[in-house]
Length: 517
Image: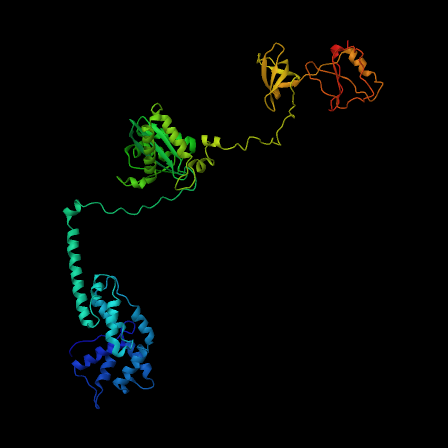
């Protein structure tokens, strides 16, 4: 027997292809069916395998497979393993096919032929295969080369052109790979194109992640710059030295002001990677993040802060108006205005995100003060503040002897505000006092006045005279006397001028004990 053929595997093999191989096997070994013998039937049953034979036996029931012809057995197996296909579905799969990325021209040519098997294109098969071969090819120089050809060329000619172009491209790639694999060339090659930067995750609160970096020497000084990643709040320190101990001292100062950060991002400077610095961070629970060596873009937040401060600081040094201004003042001015300027990333000022408010600047003086007249708090515990008029006689606190609480008689000469007055002493001195440092002076009546006050006036319409305090201005009468009556001009025992009763609650005055004698 010439050649060999394996058993048919229903899970993998196609029965149509297997039948074609089987017929060629019969042809080369001259196996034919005759009236006396059925050699092809016997060979088919022997070669298809046990699993396929069981299926064939069930398909031939009630007859045995050996009692049927070779063509009948092949038809049974074809109907079972190759059911009738939908032509339009096969064509849809054919037209949707595209050449894969790593698929060669030959593989693509074979695949479209295989997809067209059940499409039933008939006489148009050649043109359809030619169109699909060109249009379904992936973008590249091969397809561009085929598009330059005339449509009258056959599929075989187009295949030759595509194979030639593919060979040229493969040769170019081989030469390029040889050049790229050159070790001396790779040692002196330039740096590759920079990758797209990945932004840091935004923190959820202020002073959670802090970026630090050093600037200098500039103007014979070094500066430590710290920037909060959440609010963009900067801290700048002038450094006499940039050792680990000096850096730790400044970081400890900021921790006392804003708290301990969770993460500290820096470069690989020796003072930031020393054992002393690592122990400090470990004891305070600070996670230290560093970038690759000689890659400052990793700590881009701090690098941008350094560039911004360097530019502004140099501009301030070159300004002739600052020639007599110290560098510390220039740094303070930069920090003040930077913290109160809107940041391009957060659209808020660092002060607003860090402190919850904007810093008060000289520009605020141009705005009207809407909070000048504020309402008095309702829950204020204290007396109702009395008011004094000009000329009122009062007692004011004397602070010439701080350890002795004394009061001096004075006269109000000026009203400075709702609770501030200027008072004049009998010797001419002028003191400024608050209403809490003043008491109203009330003079006790004399004995004769008290007796005269007990006598009821003859006319009930006449007002009761009251004594006037020294220096107190005369107040007009609340109710003028009737026109038919004239005030009495008789001299009174007390020369003190009489004023009418004021419209205020009346109260009884108790005579001090020293006047009762």
